[in-house]
Image: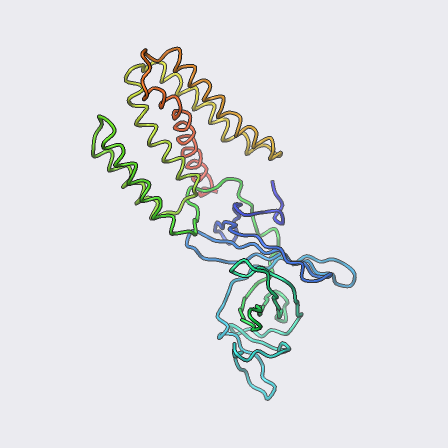
Length: 345
């Protein structure tokens, strides 16, 4: 099991009774005495929060702090003016030095530290980032003002955070069924691909027209209401296309096909589950990548020795795609059961 500080993009964690997905990881070496790692976390509702692991050298000892933060409106943050009273920062007139006192959400904060370093902006370019850190009297709640330098101008952002204990986070060993896919434009591509699949199979051979239309329609609607990973989409396509071929394939040699189907499902069940229980990720990768070629070899063995002669093109296609169909089916079943396990726990 990974430590929390070693999580990376694609991992899943749970806190506050909710599942969050790591969509990005950034590291900032702000100074010789301050280092920060930031993970962008997204949930199924597309809410975004940031998990920070700040390592700071205090009294010649390195101390680690875990902070959960989210972006807030800068206009809701007030600073104590020199002449008394409270006022918001004017984004076009940012003071050179941070105010000593701030308030947000009915809580008062005092200036803690100013950090200057290089960071990657939304365009992917390295730029200067200045951070004003504030803490409340309990030192549990954090307020950060980030100033991003672009074209010799400073653009401020505000974040409200809370110090957390590392034990409050749980790394989820299995991915749930639904997963956030922030690139919504991919839905259009998916729809086009599924539409093409439907048209191809309408003109390709003797099977029910309604089935050809219902498969892409159902999948597009399913994808629109729940974002899934690209690997899921590929597996679904493989399972659908090859299941149609399988129908034609088993019409001619049903017994051998069923034997192959059961055997291959057992193999892929092992392939998809066993690597998750292996601590060595390299061994896990080898087991994933090694079983599929073996299944293809077995599939072509059946094709050459048992498929009725003369061999037709659809039989060759079935030999190619059957392993993909089985892997896609097992992938869906296993992740569905893992999703039920995750929700139950």
